[in-house]
Length: 131
Image (cartoon, rainbow, N blue to C red; front, side):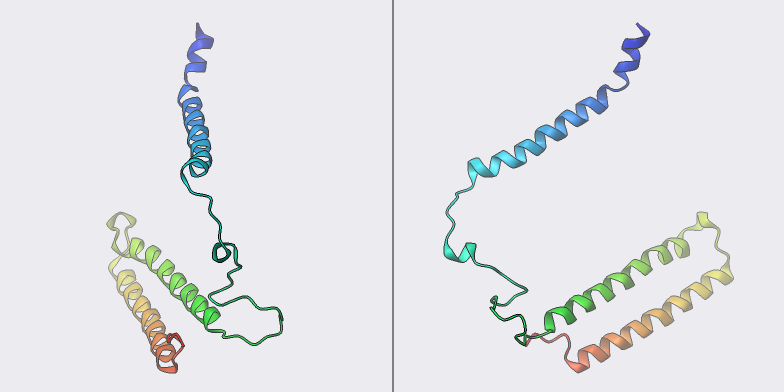
């Protein structure tokens, strides 16, 4: 009887694996059943970074896509720095003393000021305009 109790401990895992396999198979089969398969020339055409594909790889094209992507990554990283700072700054259980909180606040203020100045520079130069 002890062996059956031991195996019953794994029952939730087996149920979870069975349901996840069932849902995975369901997500693979349902589009084949419900979705119409009517490909046309537009759906089958190649799409590259917002412009029509071209034959020559040395052809000049607008780098605006890359600039916007780089700016997105920069903003994303800045936001990623804000989360740990906010957790340490505003969580009383971490025991940050008053001097550290003041230093952390002004450090983040300087960080965001530099970021905002860079953002204004990019805006002024027109890097955010879609031409």
